[in-house]
Length: 398
Image (cartoon, rainbow, N blue to C red; front, side):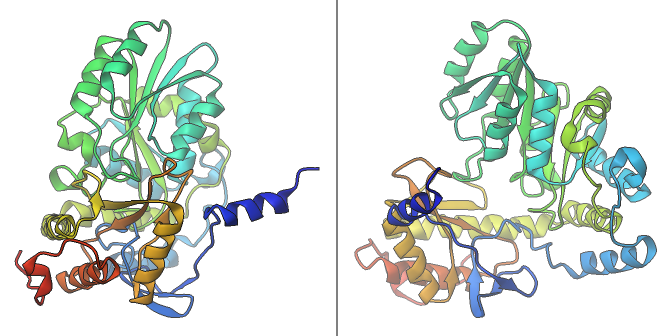
């Protein structure tokens, strides 16, 4: 029999053992974690909508009107008017002909990829794609060819030598590095080689592009160029669930074929109504996105001066690469001792030797919050290169 206890012991010894934290109260920068007050820099609540009073109000009113549970799958008796409204609003927001709701982003990727490709087909996947994409590719039964991160020349060669139905899948914003895919040349390449392109915009939706319409909108690409667009509602939108948007044939096909849509309970109608409200807030949040961009710029400027190794990211995801698992865990623990929650990300989530602190910034953070993080990073790295600015009290210079 397989020795599961041995595997757990080996993970602990390798610095790979994972533990949960218990959060009490609403999601916001000031969290209570295992009873300890901490300032969080690891949430995906990029616009501070997870605890927005308007969203809470709409949810409360919707509960009174429509109750709590979805009670059934969409194809039985679970497809509520609120779901229809949210799908229509998502389609309009993303500039697509239609949209289809899924319970989570993970389920969306599993269902969509396995519906759009199967035995005899070929899927092309960036090596740094999210685990849900990787698992969707495996589940499909299709041949899977992975290309080095962002290497479109390698992808072009693979597409050139492959016949039959081809599906190219990529994150829009990569969740552990924070960089944005080269979407325009990627779309051109797919058009040239008659490949269907799917973009997972979980971390771009709400943050990038005009009025937060995402990385695909920021690149100026329409549904003909990017036929399959996935986004999540549990990050910048602050609620829960996911969607796929594209031409009308896509959603009709997925209703017939996507098992993670067909065989699961619909999201609570009240949550769908709160998500509609959240979409309206996202559309009006240009000032919040400007504030977030200013936080990102200041963080990068100051942390680079400290001598930390930052990834080339202009998004709210700002990883500091440390290297070893032990050193990353130690730095995370030192920050927590100073009242800051910044989680250590280790293999297999990231490649071996590239363990990191995945710092995420939110429009809900103030400059005082950011300055507190910057001071702690200086204190936790006494041998870092510190600029004269960092040796003085922080000023809100943006």
